[in-house]
Length: 210
Image (cartoon, rainbow, N blue to C red; front, side, top):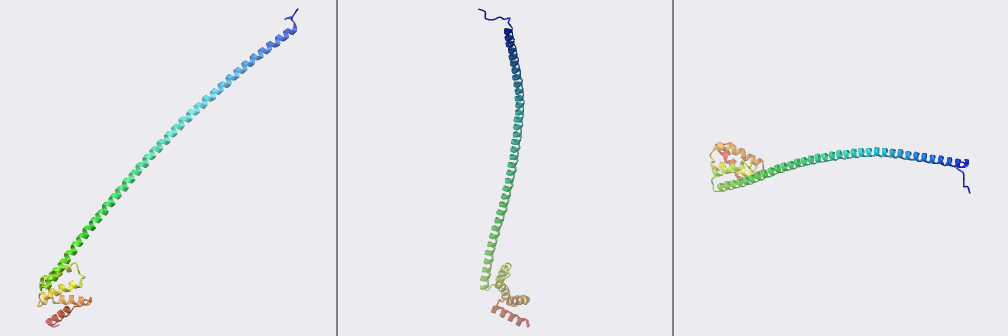
């Protein structure tokens, strides 16, 4: 039984068709392979470009961050130095003020002590003058009262005893009459009244005949 003839037209057509299909498939495979390689190469190129951009961006970011960090570090260092300098200036000013204030306090204490000592000295001098006057030692009493009068110019009582002691020390000394009369009249004008003033003025008036 015959299965077919390879020389028959139908067989040749089938064979030719199959050959064409095979060629077409081979060409398609080559095209697809080329296309894949081309796209792969393009993707690799784009990836490489992206890698370069990322690397540049990374370096730029790192450089910028480093510069900012350096700037912040320098700024912080400058601010710290400025703050430290300001603190030192404030500390120096406070120390200077404390020194000045301490000096003022010390001077006030000295003045207070000096004033207190002087008040004590004046008081003692006045008591000594009063005792000398009570003992009838008028010349010495006048000297003491005049010493007190240097610091107590507005003390009318001291002014009276200073002038009266000088008069009693030598009532006959007419050279002192004018000064004593002037002093006693001023005391009377200031409201200071004592019978010794009137008695002394009357005595001097009788002595001088005025």
